[in-house]
Length: 256
Image (cartoon, rainbow, N blue to C red; front, side, top):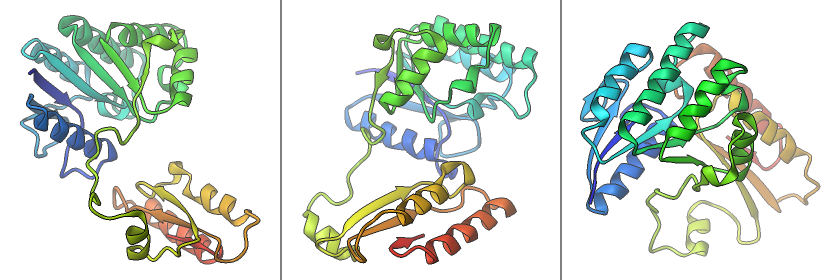
């Protein structure tokens, strides 16, 4: 069994990546591994380290040699401040490369990958070296793998697709499909669509509701449930939730 360092957001911080990390930690512990967690904010993690700077990433690099595996829940927001200039961005990316080279056992879980993460020119080249230096590189979908490989000229074999729920613990092991549908109020013949996540504009729940409204289905044949909550109490996000509720109220079969 391995001594593992998990790096990323962690509960009780309200963060989808943090929830993912906690589920993976639980699975690793059940498998008998020795796991410590390092998060960028105060949390239930064993260690806390401000990561949004070259200095923070440098401090992380000094620690990774103490572990047999280092799992990084990667998203730019974990490591790069907003806004970030080209020089600072390059310094942080260089620090991530140094971390991968020092450990040789870094596993990067890329969440919500977007091709524009690395920009163009030297910055993209530097991040390409980070992706190549990691021992393992994971995304959640085939689309993300294709985009990542195209953006950074990586062979498809370099990137693994691991389903987002691969480490999640089921909460209805003893209930069958019909019992669960009954408990949730879903009719036996009703087709149910589920959109789940923090209710933020970039998630596109409004587009899902509009698309559902254009389905040519008889009344009661299908439903769409948008399930989630506010990640931060921001006035713009609160207004967005109200807009989603109004849109759902005007769309038969949609619920928020």
